[in-house]
Length: 327
View 1 (cartoon, rainbow, N blue to C red):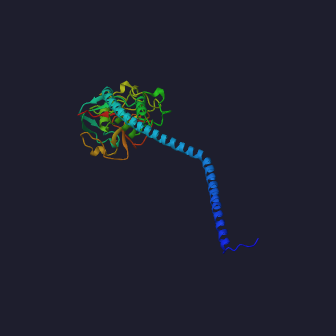
View 2 (view 1 turned 90 degrees about the horizontal axis):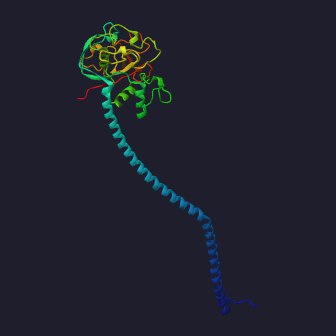
View 3 (view 1 turned 180 degrees about the vertical axis):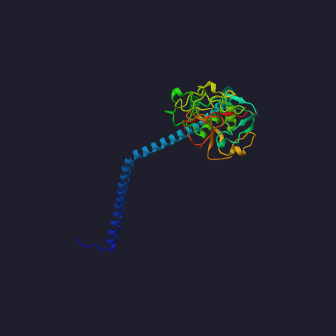
């Protein structure tokens, strides 16, 4: 076959035929390529569909959980506010009952003068002087383990370190609570609507107005006091009925020392006011009064002064509470 002259009439015809044939082929090829891409996409999409559905389900679950959590949180906050109101109401009722109970546990000490200090005692007990006091009330007995445990249970306050599993030995329910710091004692007193007594209040309630040496009189009597380690530790607060003061305040001499409100200063009596003294304005130690179970007859005198850092927790220190009359 001879060659075709591409520039002749037949050549142009040949070019037209070739071009007419190539366009459909290219279109068909491009279509086949696109179909292959679409098929691969469909296959990949089919493989990914469960994952997408799982993610969508997870997203829906998370959104539902968020909504539920928000609802629960709102309900919880509302319940907390309701409980706060209820707790405040219950605490108000408790305070009202405590106010009714306080007079039954306390003895009122009339206003008037008493003899404070001891010229024959230690240097921090001089000078002996007449002090004028306003009226006040003071607990008949020191605070007991049983009473303090109610405070611990209700408020969540830390128990004394000597207790086991959050409670005292059962046989010591009526013993004075010990191993409490000054702050522990002060917080208990506040909880029951009272306060710690001042040093002068404590001495007057223990000694009376005439300046006697012990709460029962001037002569030391072993059967009226837990001292000189005769009992190897604390005893019930009502163990010595003969040891009451002229006002009927019990267990002030011996058994345990008792925290007072005052800061301690050894020369305070030399400059102290004679009307309602409340101690120095500051210091390192707080006053403790009353002596304790291992002290001799000098240490358990009504005028005998003791002191300790306010953070001290010892099995020889307890407390009782006082209260200022309303109005």
